[in-house]
Amino acid sequence: MYAVLALCWLVVFFDGLDVTVYGAVMPYMLDDPAFGFDASAAGRIGSWTTFGMLIGALTAGNTTDWLGRRAVLVWCVLLFSAGSGVCALAGDPTQFGAGRFLAGLGLGGLMPICLTVVAEFSPPRRMALATGVLMTAYHAGGMAATGLGLALAPDHGWRWPFAAGALPALIAVPLLLRHLPESPGVLYAQGRFEQARATAERYGLPAPSAKDAPAPGAAGRLRAVRALVAPGRRLATPLLWAASFCGLLLVYGISTWLPQLMRSAGYGLSTSVSLLMVINAGGIVGMLVAGRVADRFGAVRVAACWFLLTAGGLALLATGPSLAFTYGVVAFTGIWLFSASTMVYAVAGRFYPGADRAAGLGWVTGVGRLGAVVSPWLGGVLVSRGLGSGGFLVFALGAVLGAVAVVLVPAVAATRRRHDDDRAARRNPGGAATAGGKPAGRSYFSRQNSSIG
Figure: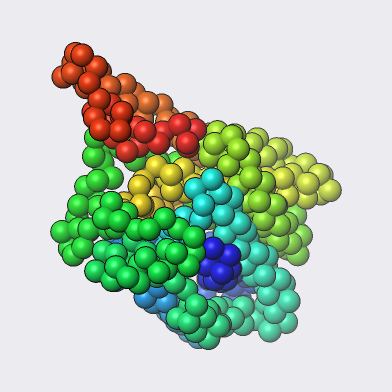
């Protein structure tokens, strides 16, 4: 498991670097008169990036079951590396936006695949912790991007940090091709039964079977999507989408616009950019804390609490505290903000069984990307209208809505379970049970519901 986690960690590190570098160098791009960049264009291009992520996440979540985790992940890395190279060479905002869209296609597919791979190779009782450890990479990459922005942009221009985004193609791709194992479930679905069993044995996993394997072909992809809104999931799946939307609204809104929001609130340029590093440092701590706490108390409880704590931190920033207090609030807000959305993924990882997990996580992250699409545009509107600190209250509202959505997931699942049990009781007045002693009407998630709360 550790080798798999390390490889996925490296890839997500580059993801965090590429996403955060835009916010880190944006003040320098806005101050570059030759490039013709303004706050409105910055928000619009940020939305292009996240729209590309939406397409990438929805596409990869299904094609990875068909073509294999490793192959699709490699293509995702190559896409976002190429996009970063286009951004470094762009001659105008339109070319730059095309590069960000291309990078978004790769970045969007990368995250659900890495989350799925880590979930597949992790012990069930350590899934939330493994997810949290994986997502520390995003914030380590975010800190590296901020460091690159501070080190390179003032003296050498904003293009050099984007040029660093081409490194994953040279570093990560060879390692993935050589060392990342294919999912036993995918191998089983492809008819490679001996290789599937050997991989499972090597990594201490249960022997794969038909129920763990995604259905083959285009019909299988369609079945996987329909399964997300089947009875037992019809209400819970949209709630997971809503929670992911709110989480990524916060993550991408704050990652992109924190420096500019702080500048609008009266802070200096270097201070505003350095706060981006502080919030990502808090994010690393938060991932480790959230994963351990969620494995003990349940990912739903932790996600909801973290969303509410995020709302409180953002509300404090809206009051315009002193500089020293601001650093503390930003650090603690980072602890809650980023790991709240990650715990939504942990909930989804336990919600969907193995055969549907890649599609489920793909759609949770993909629909959630709509929040990432909206947030750069929203931040641009807030900054262009001079709302300054008041903009933090808008994002705080999103955190409250995220808490409500994730809390309702086990509630609606429990309601469905009671409905199924009542229907089974009406069909079997004598209390007959199926083989294995489980009530006849209960779905997979009905039986697993208690593990996510």
